[in-house]
Length: 496
Image (cartoon, rainbow, N blue to C red; front, side, top):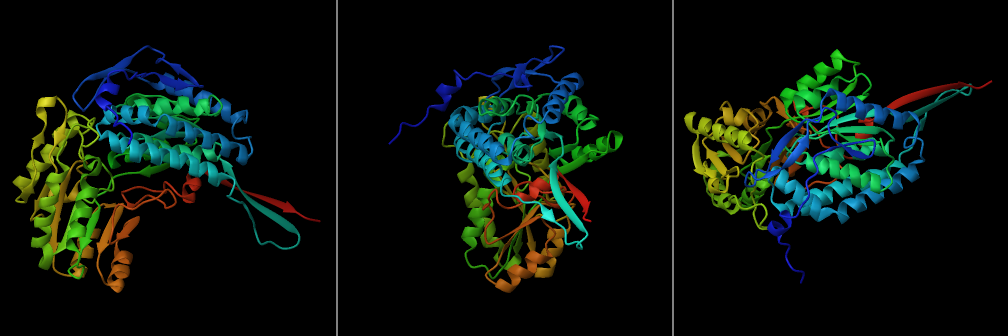
């Protein structure tokens, strides 16, 4: 057996480089400004991070445009791009322990999940798109004998990617994989709350053979670097993952600039429907607890609205209340914690505010409900479960982005579907039933981008991810993601 990794010891020697990566080189912000980055694990100072602003974004976009225009990457055959992306994926896996530790110290998730989930999913995403790019064929339209109409995909040009702090590497990979595979250049703006792995990925990409200028990273605040990227007149598309509030701004920025394409992957308030005919209630309870409390509940697809048939609700509530303590907050560096730290004090206060709102509005807290591990200086909240929630309560309507579950009771299938759909979001949902007819009927009725049946957390890069309504537009993952980062061109040839 291998010796367990002492993550706490390794953290003491880890190097934190907060500079940007532009044109393949680590660089400070042009005006020299930085901001201090602290770890949510225990509030330790990690280091100074470049505070990128409009001038830095402009430098990165110029580098990306030059790389695209001279075809140093876009002009390579798909098979050649594939080999580079596969080497990039191998580099990610080889640096996995370093990346996992950076991710955990940066945003607070348990380190074993940073390594086993985030690093591996990031590498698989990059490798999968590399493998896919020389398998995607163009089209010939069915014209008459006097014409040949070719329908081809072309890289868009410069892609701006703005990603959140909950899954920094994975969310970046979902943009980078299809954008780079298609031949685009990318400027990535990571969240100021989790900037470190993004720049490290850019370094690994260059080591793997990606030409300088093709993948650039500029850290900074959203209202400075993010806004400058979205407003830039030489950016062809924005791939954004984050809040619905900021997603609206992305659309506004596009209108105020060059009408660039905007693809938003936004929030969710996913419904988890448990019907009375499903016999293994314990499995449903275990699944929803594991899915809800994974990543501290900081997941856009977290099943935070649990709709349970009235006849089995009491039993279900007892089972979930028993499951919740198994996800007690622990030291993210221990390698054993199931629930880590929330990303910062602001997020912790937001989550605690929602818990207060649930109590005030009359919901019954049956598990958790308090801050945890305050003695560490970090930002932790107990896994929390509310019963007696109604669909009009604040905790049932708004995305909390923390480990807070709301259980809502229903009496009929029609009522359950109506309540599930009575949300401005439509990202994911889950149906638990032993009736094949009901499973299909309810799945069709739910307005969500993904509907799980008798499971929740199964997933793969081969299936699209995205939502209906205010959960966004376009799809990440799968071959459908190429639609976001390519243009369709028709070439009509007259044959005499």
